[in-house]
Image 1: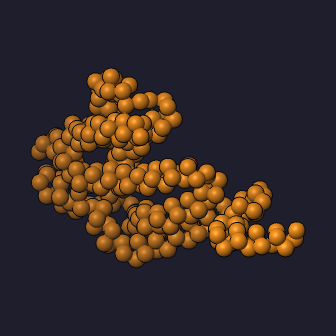
Image 2: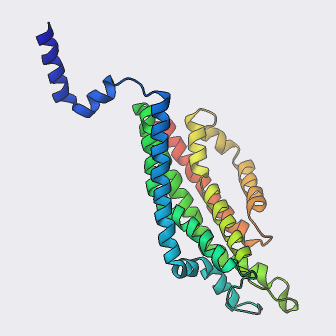
Length: 265
């Protein structure tokens, strides 16, 4: 009996491999083991963020040039007193590069952080859930990046309107700290709102909405999207909400098509 069991175990190892047998036969992780794994994920992520931040701080001039590019383009065609950004506090000469380095470091470390988070949650997922979870995570990151990049390139349009709205009666002083906050808020708003397809497909997968329901309520949804862009975009110019509303409407229509195909597979 023992020989037959050993032979069967040997055949199982040959067929499935050591890793798969271990995944099946190992007992569930204890609470302390889960905390240990979470600790490892946090440490690796923080190290990656720290390395990325140090690199970004060393290359401050390069990344600062990228940050200020939309502003400098706008200042050339405005009535501002200067064509460069200014700072009004002595400490901002150091605090701004540190803030920028922390932001760029997080972006550079994002692949490592995403991989660590994925390695932490994937053991708890079933095979079917893994097939959907990975495209969900990847598409979320890609759509956020596209939204942030889109905001970066359309930013000068909205900035030009805001800076020149008062005409020659007033001059704009481009404070770098205020601009950095505006820049970060705009990138985040565009990045999050570009997650609309992911949200729609997820709701469809949960059975909360269907492509047919979305088509029947298209006009109301379009109106809601337009009103939402007016609320979430910083500033009071008409160009930034328009620049956000157009791609969101296109993303909504694309999401309906994708949801329709998924539901009819």
